[in-house]
Every structure is written in structure tokens, then in C-alpha cells.
Length: 259
Image 1 (cartoon, rainbow, N blue to C red):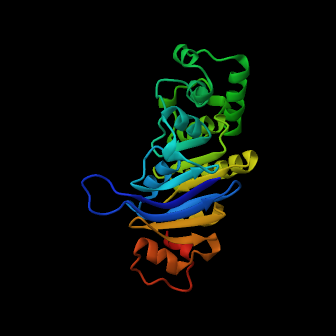
Image 2: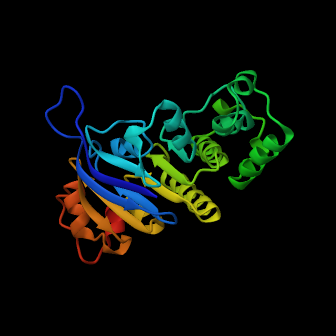
Image 3: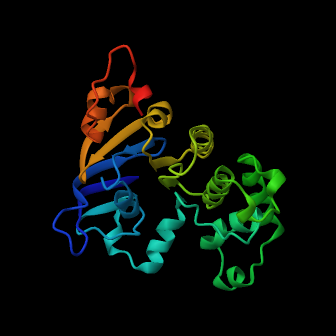
């Protein structure tokens, strides 16, 4: 579904790659968590996957077709199949939950309909269903600016799912949330992932969440892929290599206590 070949990114004005020679193949049904310190290249990699950032070299293929050959309209069609959940929500604060979620349909509708904000009864019912699925039915008409952080992120998930994507991408979607809320958001992501048979790729700092929910973990360090494997194989050694952990970890305490 998504194939990345020899992908490198260097930002202007820098002398070090944000990503270096990344090779990956990601398939439908995988729940992938990308780990790494801030600046490791996680966000850059996610943005390359859906064509929001053009690589310096290498290529990203979606269903066997290279993104680099597509024009803006074709890229918009690709992004329509890739729902995106952002760390800072990217919602319209003064609009209601329902209105924000309905924007997930914009890629399938005419510009005129989007400008005047007209939605059919069927579209509204579809939006109400995903709002119910993320547990926000009681807040459907509430302005987003009045919601908690966890509720806003659930709006973001509902909006992305309403796109009917085949790929669900998340760029640090729980970084600003408390641990309990973060765990609940990941439960929702897993539920949406299974229900819609998606390829899900999430950037996350919390190793506990990655090991609990992912089927595959990737770890980046200084723009290089240093781990690609099963969650159970991401041990204390890999954790220390990824995060430059300098503490001596006791064998009596598992890795999850050190995250």
C-alpha cells in the first residue's frame, strides 16, 4: 500500500538530513507506531507519506504510484484516502463538533457546496454516526472551543474517519494530553483501525502506548531508521539507543516504568 524507497530530506539552511535513506513497506491492517526523540524525523516522515512534504531524494509510492509525479489535484485525491490527526487538533474553534467533523467530507464534494456549507441529510447522518462512535453524541452541537483537549482530539479522529480513508496518519496526536486521556485516545484509534481495516501510522513519544497497541514499531534517531520490528522486540536496549537513556535500569523494573 505505502512503499518508501531510499527517502532522504534535508531542510534548506541545514547541513544535516532530517531523514536519511529510509526504506519501508507498510500494508493494510498494520498499526504502526513511530518512536523517537523530538527532532528525530517523525513528523517529516509522516508528512512525506501523504505528500505534504517533498523529499530531497528517494520516493514514496501509494498503491504502486509515485507521489512525486502527481500534480496538486492528484495529490489532493491521494490525501483524501489518508486521514490525518494532528497534535494541535487543527479544528475551527467557533464551529460545533458536527460542523468540524463534516469538514472531513470536503475532499468528496464540490467547492461550491463546501463554501456555502450545505450538506445532505445522508452526509449529516454519517457524521453523527462517527461522532457517536467516538463518544461525543452529547456534545454534537457544542462549539469546539468549549471542549477539553481529549474531546477535541476525538473530534479530530471523527473528522479523519469520516473521510473514509484507507490510511490513518497521526502526528503526535496525544502529546499534549494526560496519560489516562492518551490511553483512551489510543483505544479509540485501535477501534477505528480494526473497524475500518486501515493502515494506521502514529507518531508517539510514549513507549508504553506503542508497546500496548502497535503491531509494529519503528524507531528513528537523527533521521535514521534504527529499529523496525514487533513491539515485544523493542527492549530496554532499543529504548536506550532511541532515547539516549543514561539511567541504569534495574532488572526488577520493566521498561514501561521508565517511560
